[in-house]
Length: 148
Image 1 (cartoon, helix red, strand yellow):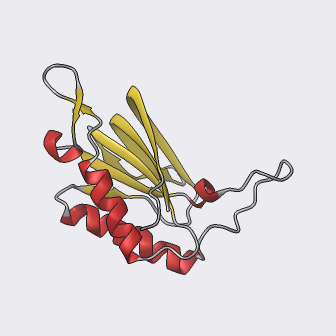
Image 2 (cartoon, rainbow, N blue to C red):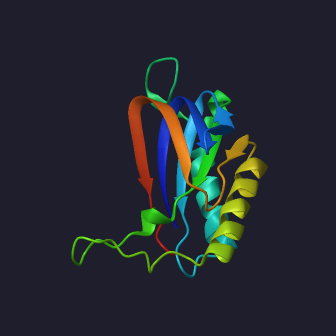
């Protein structure tokens, strides 16, 4: 798995011009599911994301998690995070999981985040989505956890 996490004051996801999901203060999490990923990885990523301290405390120090600040997550499936750009100029996506399995793990990751106590809004798996967001900071984290 690979995730790109951005701290936002608001974010809205649309498909074909119609608003599908909207959050206020929180995170956008773009999640790529790799071949061979399992529920175990999904649970690890959810736990790490829910407890990642990227929000400011009363002293302006980045020291609080999304749970601490009562934020929401907009979870967006994005297979392009698994792009391999090492050869030529056209990325290949052979490292991305097959759609059916990827969708199941994407949804499972969302359920694990919800179990951590974080409200989650979802994108539309496989759809051509438009995401508008206002970043804070900006704070952008690329999360890639080593295998255990």
